[in-house]
Image (cartoon, rainbow, N blue to C red; front, side):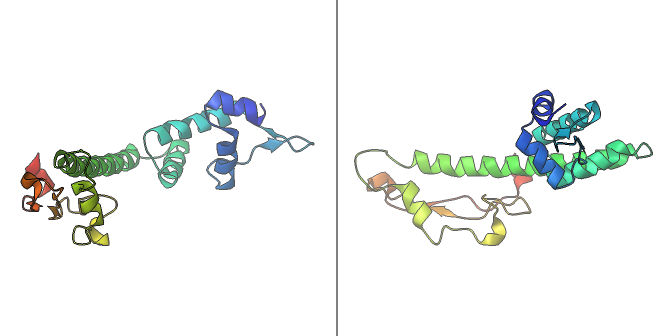
Length: 179
């Protein structure tokens, strides 16, 4: 099969197939005398494997490890399980980070009256240098690597009497105790 037919059969783009070849995730296919790529059913099977692994959130490096294990008939299933278990932990941490972000945004939105005035606690919080997290507490979340919410105060001064002071957050609480 040519690259277009292979892409359609495997459910990935031709561009991705070329990329996977360029990083040696898949082996280079046989080429015709004219230089066209020719793929086998095994190549399509491998591309489907890669596509499914990507759908489950595995990185290219993890997929490379999984492919190696898949082709190694003397592998231990515990090696595969370890990679999948580590991915679960990574995804669960990301879910907690996203939930913390949603909670913070929800709190800011609840404290914004959304009226005709320009003052807004959401923008105030985003612009407040005291509210910014240190780089060690990121990436892109309100959780540090130990699952503890970084203590912050939300500026809630949008001009209304009820929002005229800073609304303090609860003390930092480990993620496990917040559930």
